[in-house]
Amino acid sequence: MEPPAGPASTRHVPWNRLVLAVLLLTFWTLPTTAQLTIETVPPLAAEGSDVLLLAHNVTENPLGYAWHRGERVENSQLIASYRVATNFTTKGPAHSGRETLYPNGTLLIQSVTQKDTGSYTLLVTKDDLQAERQTGHLHVHSVLPRPVITSNNSNPWEHEDTVVLTRGPKTQTTSYMWWISNQSLPKSTRLELSEDKRTLTVFNVTRKEKGPYVCEARNPVGISRSDPFTLDVLWQENARALDVGAITGIVIGVLLVLTPLAVLGYFIFLHRGNWPPASTSGRGPSGSSVSQASLPDARPPAPIYQELVRPDTDVYCNISHKADVGP
Image (spheres, rainbow, N blue to C red):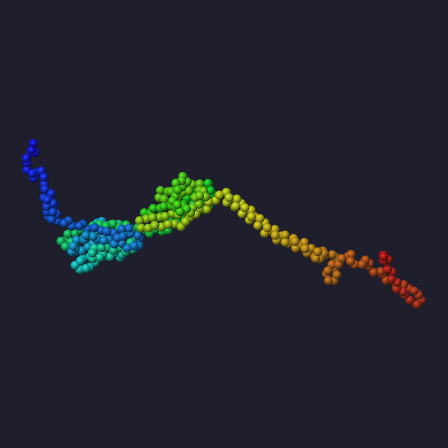
């Protein structure tokens, strides 16, 4: 049986006709105009850096450009405008003194701050007096300061105290990471990070958690690490060492007091025989005392009498009666 008859053109289209149709459609299709775009260079801006807002696919032979702050075209938000015919730039109310508008439509912003974060709209006036606009966005990130780790307890006791380590200062759009002894934080029920990861809590601290601890701060434009921080964890041996130190201090203090007294006593002992005896009532002309045992037995002088020997001649004789002197 033969297949049913019919026009061949309705069942098969030769491939050469398809190729010809594609070529004709490609030739007759007018090229589309590229759309105006804004590129931020660098895409991630750090505070204090210079940023370019590049205008791409600008129409040929434009009459002028105008940059505005924000997403709306308003005279009060005009940064600067440029007329191609006169090569003249006009500054607007929103000009801060750091913006420069180039003849190709690119806007330069120097020494950007976080206040420069936001939208910027470019208005391009074509030679047919039609306008085209496009909005770009700038986000300025702060330069990260060096993190500093502080502790709520400078001398925690092992198995007794809980230590809270805090990273400062606080900055926006910043993520944090912690290391202990140059390793990432281990999984432990005694280690707990806060939701923003700025605070690390160590429950019932042990000597294993002495550290050192390091905190790293990151944002899209930089990384900053803290200096190592080491906990001074005290344990029982420390307590005994403290007791020994206290006792040693007391002993030294007592020795400092007793040593001068001992020296003074020894000095008195050595020189006790060379000291003069106590004063007596018998003193010589010079005031020095004289021992009674060293003097001879002193007696009062005997009275002297005159005796008449010859009354007729008045001759007298001196008689001295002395007391008996013992052997």
